[in-house]
Length: 142
Image 1: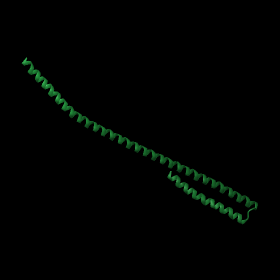
Image 2 (image 1 turned 90 degrees about the vertical axis):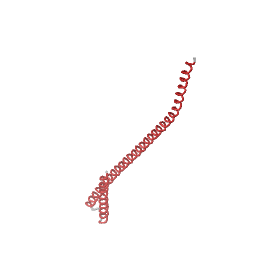
Image 3 (image 1 turned 180 degrees about the vertical axis):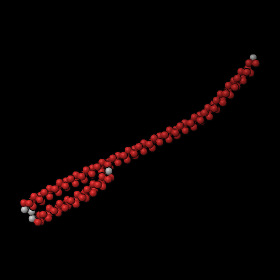
Image 4 (image 1 turned 90 degrees about the horizontal axis):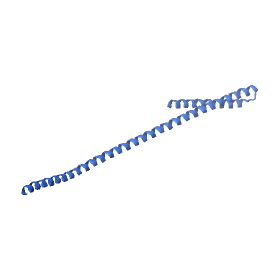
């Protein structure tokens, strides 16, 4: 019986020693696990920060595009407005010139009335020249 007790005792001792080493190893493992989790957490935080930066950059780019689109529409509207103004002034000038010729042929106009009509026509011409220059500048911006 003594022959059996000694090997059983050693087996028990080895098993206890192995379990002890596993317990201390699990302590080291838990530290490693915690470190690994901390690294993973940091990586996840970095990924989140990068995603947020990308989102901010995309939002900023979208705002920039929207602003450029708004500016382009405003420019187009001002070009249409200037063209409309020029066309209106041309029609007005033609009407005044026709009136001047028609009334002058009939003898209805006094020299003062002729001067007034001519000055109005001249004002329209100078205004149209200025508007055409502005229109050229606007079209260059486009």
